[in-house]
Image (cartoon, rainbow, N blue to C red):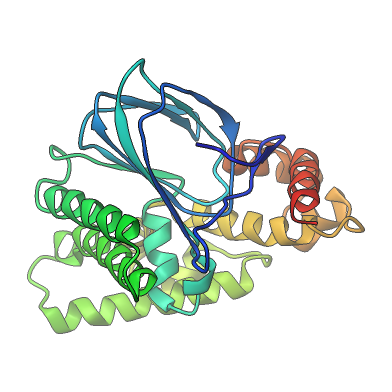
Length: 292
């Protein structure tokens, strides 16, 4: 259920004294295009559920699990009868964890876990979500603490399942895997800091110590996106923060975030966010009015 919607912006009304919201939804009600600042995880329990996000329409079967990234505009369509878990945890309070950004990149903008695609981890994640639902509804002491621990376990399962550098570098041992991981964390940190500069694939590949070919393949395995898409995602994330200030024009933000022209900035912003920078400013204004 969407309790507070202004324009496209949903204000998530968390459970009292927590940064969590979960409901066992059995409403035959569809929800219009909207976005929010929380992660959203949906798992149908009975019947299908349709999610349209990032230009993709996904029909979830019973037990399929979709992750919808913060800020991703999406539409939900329910059948005449059915049940599903809808879980919305705030993630800002976990940003101090270095690995969180890598994990969120792996599921951005949406990610679907099915038994066919993820036979090794689907059932585990399915069971953890059921246990999160039980814990949330029981309202025990330290409930929020335990639920976030379970959420981190889910992200760990996805991360470890996706990142296996031995697929690209056969024969590497655990120590070398850890070394590669640390190297790519450092590279991502560097990109995050310097994303508004002219970052060149050849130069960053040299920093990594890999050939451009191997760096590109390993980087995509680590982040789930190409090098240039990752750079643009970081630029757009920086632009979002700047657009929150009404005194910053779209042109000023485009230049400050490393785009060659306002038109290229607008085009990339719409690709990543699903709306133009001007529309985003308007959406934020609506959302801010809710909180004010």
